[in-house]
Image 1 (cartoon, rainbow, N blue to C red):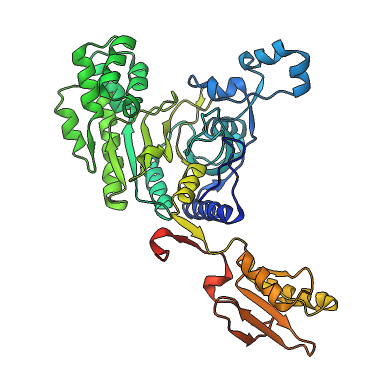
Image 2: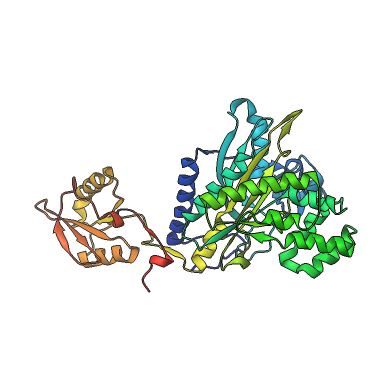
Length: 455
């Protein structure tokens, strides 16, 4: 189980916990690269103006300033948030990526496929699943001028494949389309579509009755309009039958039809290629203003209270340079949120706490050089090896290896005869450092899922 962090909101992992996190990260990298996504890294700091250019999110942003400056001029430090040229830590990876695309457009081949795994910082109220410093893993495809809708479908399928490869419970990608929702609201006479979306986005937190009140007080909806908006949000299907259910509500609008068609394409492809993993959920709104089409939130089945572990969607106007537009679509996996749940629920564990497979024991202090030669031979063949620090009694060296989870101990006697001991079985056999290899399950740390763990 994960430890409670000594500084709330800034998690740290023990070595065996970090190995679980690395397994998650390596799995995501492998899947992303198999689909042709290139890795990039952007700076941790952006200007406040860049971070806040889309959506009201300033309360989440950590501004940067030097402590000496703050003490010398507290009023200037307080004004930093309102200065668009002040610096702040990025709160997600999408906004910095949009800036990166604009600045490097002349060097990129479009459509540009990228994945990015980095830390981000947010002023969250710390709790499980919500930290102030956490790791995200994003994939995006960005076009120059246009981006075919087909990429909305592909992104969802890549994420479904990536999440299926992780040691996590079953999940559902809950997908909606902003065009569908906005077209519907306009069709029933609600022009403040952003306000309606903000209210609908609170549906799971406060319930339909309170959302209906918000719609009436904040966007001026009538009781009938609020009821229709809630009826739309109540539609959830695992296939394309949502289309008929929406049309049965009797609302017509061109933007609504466009959104219905797009969402139908995503769900239809998912039913064929990722059956049981995707849900058309017309309550999904996403809080950030820059989304323009497909929107996605992902939950773990049975762990819905954790919140979305993967979210994102289509953004057509986030990145632009003069008249040149760079539309994109992408999804972001909350790696720290996932790892926190994996550890706290014992959903998976590492087979040992260190990467070391072999400890080379010392017969005496003069044998250290020979032991290093053995270790070098083993390492040259990809076997993680370390040498004992001092020539304690063999029993003590074996106990040291066992305490650290190292599965094998290597011995070399005065005559140059080599033997290796399997700590688990107790077997000790002759071995040649130029040829011996541990069993595949011991060569590298294995992360075992709960389904495979002994009862």
